[in-house]
Length: 85
Length: 230
Image 1 (tube, rainbow over the protein chains, first blue to last red):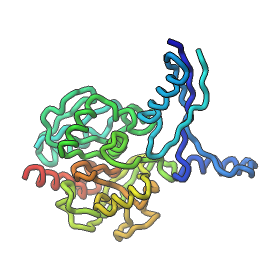
Image 2 (cartoon, rainbow over the protein chains, first blue to last red):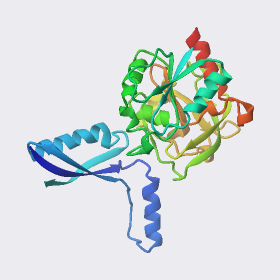
Image 3 (cartoon, chains in turn red, yellow):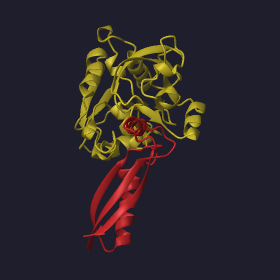
Image 4 (cartoon, rainbow over the protein chains, first blue to last red):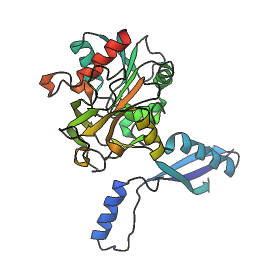
């Protein structure tokens, strides 16, 4: 078995009201970052997993996202980074 | 009638529910530990408020996988009543017992105060003792209570009478200023298609005695007692 470190981004689905993201965007505007259009605040989750190969590790993490790490009603996820350990 | 109150690590309204059931209504109640694998023969399961598992990941997301929840889901599947309040509502949504999700309050503030609710469906086993359209006063205490679902799901909930409680102003009118968390369509409480699982953010168990500021929550328990005993 190989080992992989997989980073997943979980973010609020576009179109769903994200008051936290809005508050951060407003703060950035106040700081002078007038070019900021929208901000969404999500989570970055890092999972170390043993798997025979990279694809299997990614499939496993996607399954984790569907079952627990992301809420399928309100959030989207994507695998952001995969490292072989 | 026997109530089972599920205690997760971080539940904090379990004693309030016990007080309402045992002290106010003289019914039997037992605590069900989250690691238990059976419901001890209870008629009604209560998922109480609190911060199960510290609200880690998302409110209710981890509690949903507690061993007891397998039994709670089976009980609900058999048509058994489940009353899911506040964190219990969040857990019920995460568990798929109810549609939608409860997100961070639009204000980004924890809201702890009384609200007015309108009874939108007085024919459920939880609301049969209320008049249709009655305006009730219940306390809320939550940071993640913004009910969110896809538009077609909301339409179905409305069309099937599954919206049970809606946030309104003291005159009983829908009013964005009276919506404490930004819930879509002002939804405060819903039932599942079978009508046996009620989820709501406001706390009926904390409104069972005028001494607590309101006795309007008694109707939820009276309705259940009348229906389940029958």
